[in-house]
Image (cartoon, rainbow, N blue to C red; front, side, top):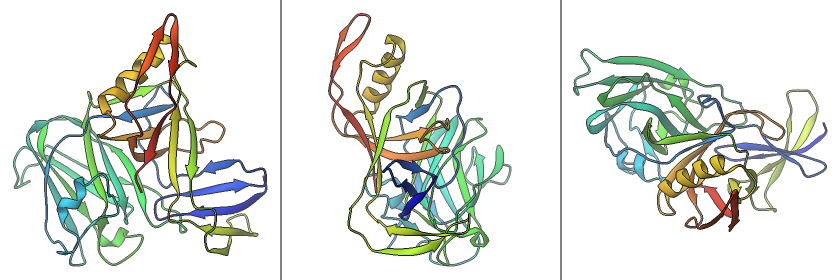
Length: 294
């Protein structure tokens, strides 16, 4: 396949061929949740974040400013750093979204008490980073036992850019906070047509045109009426639980056609869901969009 250009942002990149077909190569793996083509994390758990070191211009409170993931938390010093999330009570976490971060590995520790002397669990998560992309949006699976505190430990040896750790947003949800469905939505990308360009050398050898686009974002579209009643009921329920004003996490977990690899996006629903039900299927709805926050 001949590729004309590579669109790059801080968070993702997109290959476009001569016919105009788009192939999103993603920016790091998500946890595969089977069965199903995609999933929605629709209930985020509240927490209070603290950090060992923080640059005052980039406070740790930015971690749950989901509408502005470029308002990052940034450490004030180099070396190994950590962030602690206090959820106020015991919670059985299943997944954690680490969004718009500049590192490729994190240690995750869970405990009932804030001293972490005898943690309930410990795990390390890492993800590959392409040299052309220095930010990651990663959905990681957690061990599952109930804990009150989560600690993320970041070693600057695994930074992909800069000299200190940075994170745009963190979201956590439990087993009731997500739904995986066997529905393959339409997807596309919004970006400015006129952007600065340069040439880069592709892994296969030849150079390709590169279009730098800081405004590229993922958009998923849903129109009820194309699937079975049971599938669309699940989709309707998940999107309704999220609602227009609430953030949600959308991820794809099955490579097929243009879906090249696992990807995850922090999104908002463009409008409230209204569907007219007529057996045996949903027969009337608007075009609903989940738009990535950039």
